[in-house]
Length: 341
Image (cartoon, rainbow, N blue to C red):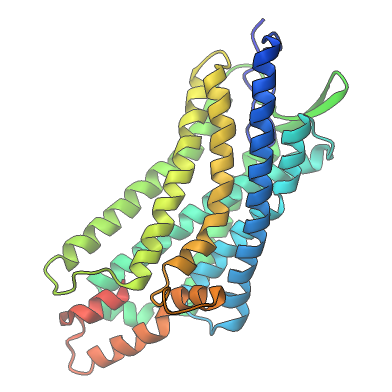
């Protein structure tokens, strides 16, 4: 008997795995689930505390700037995602969904809202960095906190719109003595495929192309400069982008493979569970990247100071740009161009 292709846990974990596996294999799967539960609990604790610190630093302690606007929005997205992890941890540990239909729709919505908002913000930041190198004078006149806030708001609106399928297709049903949360795409694969493919294209493929293009232009533009090392914000954003793609690419691959296969392959099921945990880990890593990418990491003892140092480039960047424009030669100084990156 074939398992239902459209049934998943709240974090896209399949629920209709054939229950005829021998006892030793079931024990192995159980042990793996315990490990994933423990890992997700650690991710939850680190994500809440780390992103909470970033929100406090960028939203309260530091003066509002374009950079802190980017980082604050990213941290808010990750914080909300991590705050919802306990629901998925309970689901993972019990193989049941005791939280009702509303939360069945809401928790996956948060997952994809985090995915889309994070990648759209990274796209905006990459375009911002590219424009700062290619058109420094124009950027100096138009790169404002207000403009950054408008772009962030638009990114969140589009992210919410693309996350709506979770509200539409998520449903609950009772199987035996358990209630499960699953994707109810109805009969047939086309709707399921359209949703998965649109998420891959809008939430990964197109952003990947845009970001790659932006950083290629930046590298080519700076190739002839005397600067041989990347500036601090360039390193921070490069690390954030690489981390995002490393964490999300396996998930998209396994989801596409799962839709393509008519049966639930055990390797694909395992890959989905592990890759979904990797996705959760992405929301925890960003605050630590801010800290370890700080310029004065070896000299600074406080984690808070490291994070603040990693996000505090705008003030110094603005002063450097202003000094470079005194002689109407803004784009001729390699140091000035690198500061914009």
